[in-house]
Length: 140
Image 1 (cartoon, one colour):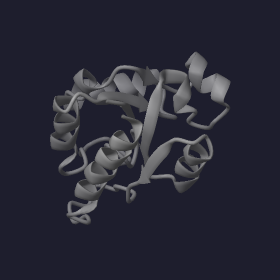
Image 2 (cartoon, rainbow, N blue to C red):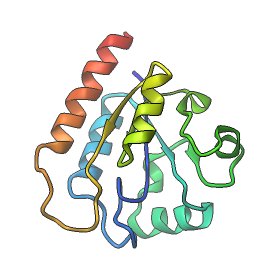
Image 3 (cartoon, rainbow, N blue to C red):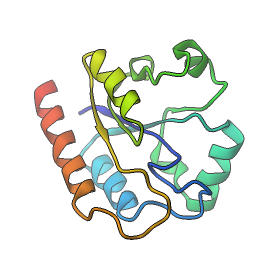
Image 4 (tube, one colour):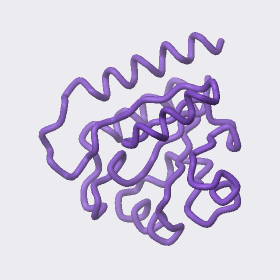
C-alpha cells in the first residue's frame, strides 16, 4: 500500500471551507480501508487547516499533515515534494503540482477545482480511485 497525499483548498473543500467535495469522505474512507495511508500537503496555515479539520471532522483521516510554514513545506520551496513524507501519489487541483511529482517519478491526479458547486463530474472520484489502484499495483 502507499501514502496518498491530498491538497486541501479546492481539492477537499471549497475556497471558504464551508463544503467538502461531494464523495470525498467516502473516497478517503475507502482508501484507508484498503490499507492506504493518507497525507495532506497544503499551502494553508496550520491554524486554518486545524479549523477546517475540526469543523468537518476531517483530521482523523490524515497523518502526516504539512502546512505552510512547516519545515517540509519550507524545504520544498512551494512545491509539494511528497517524497519528504513518503508520499507516492498526489491529488491536487493544480496541474503544475502534479507535473512536479510526476517529474520526481511519482504519480498524481489533477481534480477539477472545487468551488462549492455540487454539480461536478460524477465519475471524477471513480477515475481517481481507479488510478490509485493502478499506481498501487505498479508499486507492489
